[in-house]
Image (tube, rainbow, N blue to C red; front, side, top):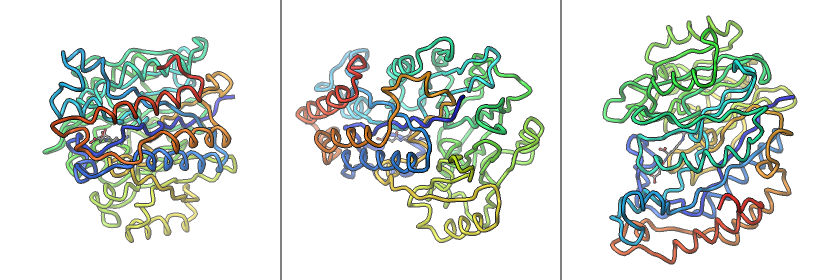
Length: 420
Ligand code: SUG
């Protein structure tokens, strides 16, 4: 029996605020401030604990080796010698945002009856463009059985692909055939459109999706210009429910019509701009929520604490849950360190619909395993990183040793040293 499993990226020990993502307002605003990697990673663990407590299965993806020496070597330099910006780009912990790791099509949607995975190339941002190879290694190990899983190479450059952050799946239930909605960008004013239509179309072909159950929608340029650098900043879907901001799509009426034609059973919950503006949606990350179906069947929205701090958003959430609509409950989680780099609860997880028995158990967690992981983090993750340690004239090489030792300790604890 297949079910939805959320695989959260564990926040890596190099988590820092270098301001590398143009168009991501939180990351830009927090550039240069001290980061707290230990706190960040423990916040992520607490979020997973909250999901487990709701009765949801939970998995993990590991931090990547940072700084990425192989990438620097391909650029004919080393961490000690590289110019500061390149150093920061090699050091980013951005792989924590697992929603950008890959696009995943459940077996029920694919022609060959297998779950298909394509790692994102993330080519728009240099600091993320070197994630794909290690992501592919992890996914190949976690989902190794070719009877159930098919792995594809990343889409080639220059077609930008940012993975599941621009991909929504609607289905009567997770294990039934569904409709996959690919959201691409064409333009975003001063900011880059990070998902290309060609990349989305290539993935739909590679995954063997039925064109009658595949929809391509253009993201609104106004949303990108307002800081919605991924579609999951303004929309989220789960089973029959699409929760979406009025200004998420370039042509909302046409988008809803196309989605309804492919999925007549869809329940669209649209938040009007006069209740929550695009700016408020981006600041509060209302839509960067996990929309989930716990075992009790009550569709639940897991929002970041920042969402309820905005009175307009809080009002909307109160009215929504009181209305007896499709979204019944709202839960709040604190992932402030990730949020400060533009990553909410939904960014931190990759959804895979699979039978847990077909997944390598080392990538699945229960409460006891999370406690063990938290123990490693508490003991070995740096407490704080000041960006000057990375971007300064002389890089802090002792920090590099700490970061590598911390990740190695985690791989050992999880018996995943083959991913070293
Ligand atoms: O790619 N931030 C990430 C945030 C990704 C959020 N993911 C989703 N919306 N699914 C990004 O912009 C900031 C890193 C820095 O600036 O150092 C960063 O990469």
